[in-house]
Length: 311
Ligand code: MF3
Ligand code: CO
Ligand code: CO
Image 1 (tube, rainbow, N blue to C red):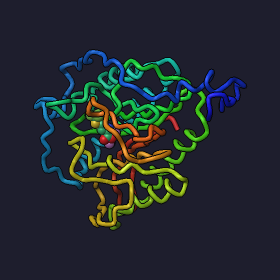
Image 2: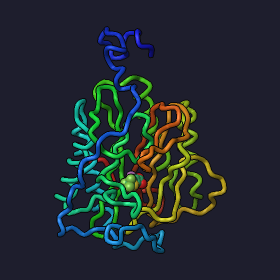
Image 3: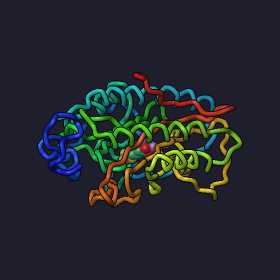
């Protein structure tokens, strides 16, 4: 859309006088002070130790771990819906962080992103907020959302010794058609990936289903960030690409828990990393969207452990 074209929103105004602000590049903003967590809340090992030390965690979970993951996953989904309900033009991503943080500690849970990944550059906030061309891991700051933006909110919480990880992309006010289609196709891609989860099939089936759908709709699939095993650890060594990786011959088994979280792009799928060491943006600054669920492999498919409470 050119500056002097009529805006897509139907206002009759020129694009440059209407929704153009949402197409300006996203820039780093000011990050607010660390939000405290009450010391009654159980924290993950990486917070105590100041670094992520992975241990060997079984990919197939015990019934007890699964029961806890079901409760924690449902709570993460509730907090995501509650945070997403606050999205509107003028709210800052820091305010979304505050809402998510307070709801999480109120639920007796720890916000998993907070201080994750130490010791050199731990994530400083309780949720990831990724606007427009930001692929993932955006840090909440003082940027106000503007009419026409899309924003991904990625909530992970730790409760009962396990993590639940889920994200959705929300519209801010009136959004252009390409962005709407991007978000719709990204959600469909997640559903295709979940439908491809079948015990006995190779893990590659998931990415194949996602890539086939996204590319048929003319969109790109991010390679550099993948889904992951999850449980007592935020990320285990199980990797779930969202593109077809035929060498991935490991077999899906009942009782496994992992995330599927496709990042789909309007243009190029490659990214540039901001100097903050977290924020990943598309190299062409075209928009990108993401949806994520934590899932459990059942005897004949998948159970979503982070079901949307509001849809
Ligand atoms: N929630 C993200 C994921 O889906 C990970 C965020 S890591 C953080 O895997 F440190 F940025 F929070
Ligand atoms: Co994840
Ligand atoms: Co996530």
